[in-house]
Length: 137
Image (cartoon, rainbow, N blue to C red; front, side, top):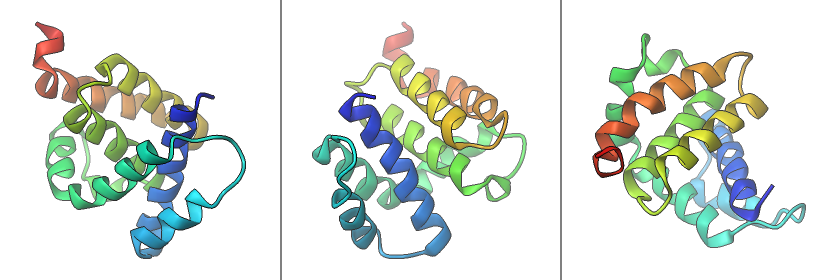
């Protein structure tokens, strides 16, 4: 894994912890920044982790129409991965949409429930053309 890939994996783990525990996101950030195993891009990690919760309602509004069920029915891992992918598509235009989707699918294969990568892929495939119309032109 590259430092950015490792950062994304840690963001998913930290968001999972935040979703399940409701603990303060800054406390969770410090806990994950203090982990020693594997090099991460700390600025990239912190930017994602701190800004996803701030934008959660707009992120959910983007995700909701792409799902065949309510977002509340998703597990915390799938939510965390969709939040990350959607945030990157919306707010990180320097990352190509194909990279965002591929990274999210790989994270879903690694951490998600069996077959959850299909849901992640399907949802982000619907979101990408809306948020990245210039890349599709």
